[in-house]
Image (tube, rainbow, N blue to C red; front, side, top):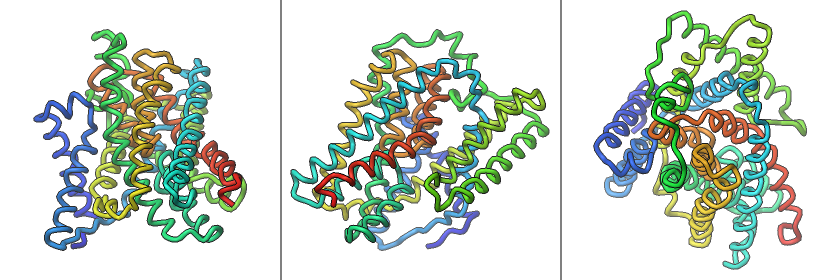
Length: 398
């Protein structure tokens, strides 16, 4: 069964409604701050997996909207990034060091376990930072390198399966980790939680009053960010400075927001940005998760599955004992830890969804929504590429 773009959009909307219904009815989903797209998307993915196994029925969704929605989300993140608010540059630097430590840890775990299990260590690297912190795009790109340069069979299939495994676990892990940590910190006071940050990404369910004019102006800014990002990515393509399109889109959004603010020409309307950004994020995640072909995860070789299971446990332990403590062992650190689980195993949109689920329940954490997108969508790709190349230079990868 093939759904066209309209059918896919209807299905994604229903996924979000199902997710909201489940979270409103099931206390454990609320208690563990599971995002609505994750709850609804996984239910649909499980139903489709059963239909595939029992009835040999496959449902294929049109994916043409996924990329524009993802890029619109990253544009909104950039337009929401007021660099003047990030005066505590130390937070960004320290979090960057924490993230770098996880990249190295993931590759050490992957390489070490692959050698211990007697499989090609390149599979261990694919089940490391390439697919977990890197996601599907990075995984597919490096899998091609492994196939062409090193002759690694089934590299692409393994990479996609590992990235899918990470995306699922990243969406499920952030909430429980945050719940465990939030019990150990002082929460924002109730008055502050209900007002501060209500116009930004921290509280996705807050009331936002916007006008048609501000909506159109914000839509124009997002469109300019997409166009500029695509153009910059095209210029950098094939060079040593090549970057993913979404990183370039985010960069253009940041430049637009801060240049317009500094010159006084236009003040970006945060409420409209958050509405468009949250809609794009929710629909993108719903489409991504409902399209998961969960039965393909069963094809993972047992050693690779063991590596991924250990990587998930390592991510949880790292978020609790390293990310949380190094970032200050406070409420902001707990939200950062939830976000780190999201993009440390899955992707930046998953990280934002994790943090939204936490802050919508316990209160805002503005610094987290400034730091995580910048690190998870920009710096991590650069550092990850360096880390991967350093590991490939080791003798047993030759």
